[in-house]
Length: 418
Image (cartoon, rainbow, N blue to C red; front, side, top):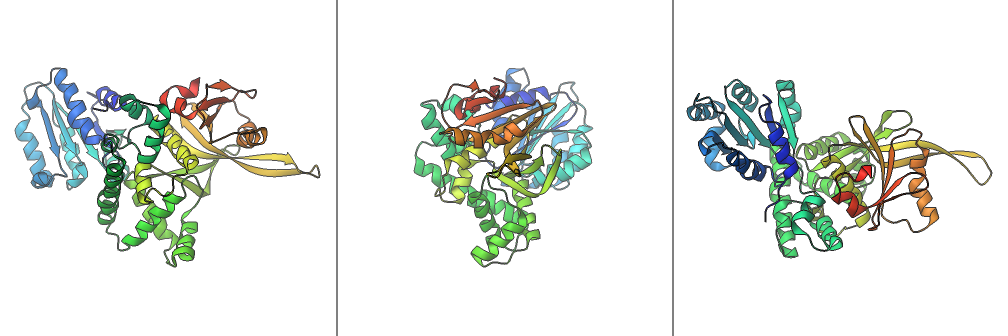
């Protein structure tokens, strides 16, 4: 069974001949290598590219260690690229293992008839080195773990059971193909400890490895909750009896973001049209890895649902913030009382914007009013959506809000526009 990853293949195809280095990023084991070396490779062959015009290197492989020297790598490629008028496809997996790799990529860009594709499991090289040095000459393609739609397309079965498997064990392709739950858990725990955590600790030369481990546990326990480095620092002191400064916590969070392990959603004042810098929310890129961090003890489906919706919006190309809006309500004495209401997600892409609430259950009118109060307080004309856990037929309520079930939202790429 092969997951097609069609969306990412389409982006690779669209980038052919654009004169840019195609930079494929994403966390460990999310499918970058398979995308490049299998799916894209087969596409090239089926479209008439010969095998000797496809140069592929896995630079994290011990056998490739000599080629981590930039001059040796360039010489290796130069020897294999002939000026025969046909295009060569140079595919370099885990490019961050090469010293001075930015200079290597700049040199390859100046080589005639060469299309360059690179991948990396750490965003630090992309955000700081490539973007700065390339000045618009790099084309990033972010690869995520399987979306629920990708997962269900191949595995099928009962939708509710598929959702349970997905939110418990996540969307890493290798995990999805393992049948036994015990084996899935074993793989995820080993993946977290031996790949993600070890890579973060070693790459950043952390002296307090236990502090990083505890930080990840704190963030895993608090998905969907607003926090900040100072509050987390206080948690370390009060719960663990460990004194870690908020600056260190902030630095460690940055390392987790660089590794595509978590993402930060900033708080945005919808009415004032500005960011509120006091607190943020942190969401995990894969729910299986998040479960492994907590030994699968903390499986609150409402919080996991919120995290999955966030990831789905990001996979669809949206920039996502947590919205805040001021509202006024009469109290028991008929006095106006100001309230700050939260909108789970403000999703932006170009001139598109959607306000989205994640609602695990709406059992009565009071709960409905509570979930929709923030959406009603918004005065602009952008679309408002409530995603319910219940498997319901999508409809528009009396306020004009789209009400849609979680699984329909996840399976339909155009669900926001129903």
